[in-house]
Image (cartoon, rainbow, N blue to C red; front, side, top):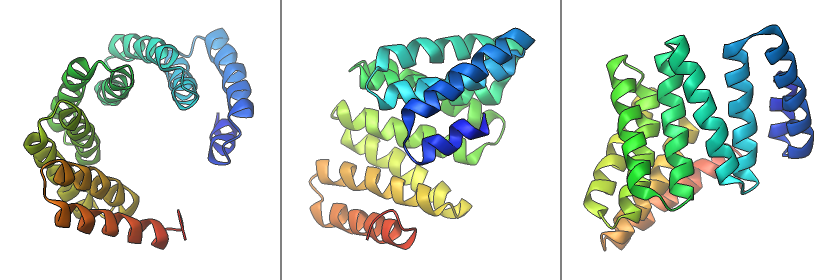
Length: 194
């Protein structure tokens, strides 16, 4: 499956998909349920990137069923968060928010800070779309604080973007620009942009 990740990194999604489909057949043949769920997740990510949100959601729901059957709470939490993103991509923002909240509860229950941060960042995006900009800013601020504490540079930049949007929608443009500029500096530093 690592080869598929390498293709993902260079955005050769066609080769990634072919590799993951081969890996899926192999894992299904061996009865490796955890492996099947992992591959389904990767295929779902590609489908989402290609705009097939409904297809991604179907795979995420299959992943969820497998992880729940295995009693794997960490992967259930991550899958809930991904389902929330897909639901938001379909315009089902209220349902999206419920998935992110469930994800956050699970992550907090077993102390996964970065998972909590991801759920909070996605909750911020959902609240922003619902016009609840103060809640969006509060979630984004919590997410940013966790990411700063954990020292995850890329994740800090991403949280700055989300907080910047929330501040802009609150009518706090100078703060929005400040967060956007911080995200840009991080992107330059980690060579995502020049």
